[in-house]
Amino acid sequence: MRTGSVDLPLHGGQCPPWLFERMTKLGRAILMLLVREEGPAGVLKKLADPFWFQALGCVMGFDWHSSGLTTTVCGALKEGLRGCEGELGLFIAGGKGKTSRKTPQDIITYAEKFGLPNNTERLVYASKMSAKVDNTAVQDGYQLYHHTFIFTAKGEWAVVQQGMNSTARRARRYHWLGEKVSDFVVEPHSAICCDQKEKRVLNLVAGPSEKSRNTIAALGCLNPERVTREYTKLVLPSRHSLYMEHLQPSSLQRVLLKTYERQPADFEAILSIPGVGPKTIRALSLVAELAYGARPSYQDPAKFSFAHGGKDGYPYPVNRSVYDKTIDILEQAIKEAKLGREEKLQAFRRLQCLTVFSAPARTT
Image (cartoon, rainbow, N blue to C red; front, side, top):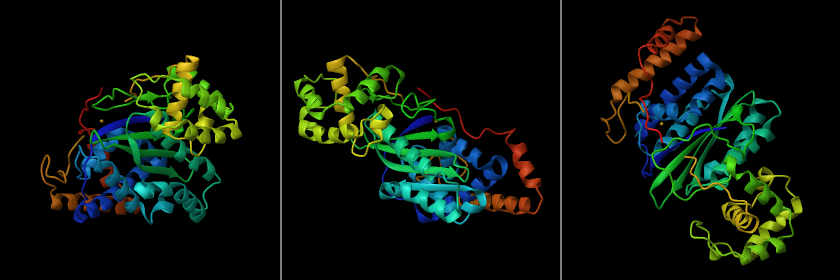
């Protein structure tokens, strides 16, 4: 189940080394405390919550309204966890750009190194399908460029991934929690939170898109020549952002040869086939609607606190001495808890009764 999404302005640049080093240390301390308090599965639930993740980024000193919050926080957590994975039973794979494409190999490497249960294939599939859904089945104008897959030694998993709309100069972040996934392609999200709804969205995982999903799966089993004949007859309506020059019938036919050979049983099966991307799905959706009356949903299925300031000085510059003191306090609390002295952790538990971790967020 996708638990939510967040829209952010697209920002360039790099996180300064002095801040990333502190984010890594603070991230490691927070992960260790969370695993101790709630277990590895509890960490997944936190990271899969867009409100909590956004607040975490702000606590770690990053800009609350920057696309870099996603990539930098995930990178800091992954680096902070390095060397502690086996002890905590928690693993982080993937990342930004080319690193995201190494996610399946990261999962396999962790499984082999730590002798994890034989569920690697299922985890790799979950990683690929969560990305395929947000990039292909839900076409909201955001091209995925960041994919982080977090999983436990028991095989529980969560996903934090982000797409980019270079024209609008915005990014959108998507969260998934594996324990709630019952069907990757039918209403896989429980909440979509953002400040801006897109006007042109092809949403094939919406409930009302069931007929379209079934028709697309059926089209994938037909002789490719028959489908392309229907496609070339279509007069494309203005609400679709797909035009004939974007996908030539010959290109569509080459992809449909793959689907025809595999005879996919349903929409999830056709979506999982390598080479079936956004253009193919848009074309098949168009044929399904105009030739067979299977209209999909075009509705967009689309949360912050500050503890140490922000990288760019908002709401105030990062206070390095306070940041370092926070890390020292957390690390000392962890060391003492390991020795059986939990007074500081008890104080943290009492503190949550007096404070709110994240401020109320604007939802749509």
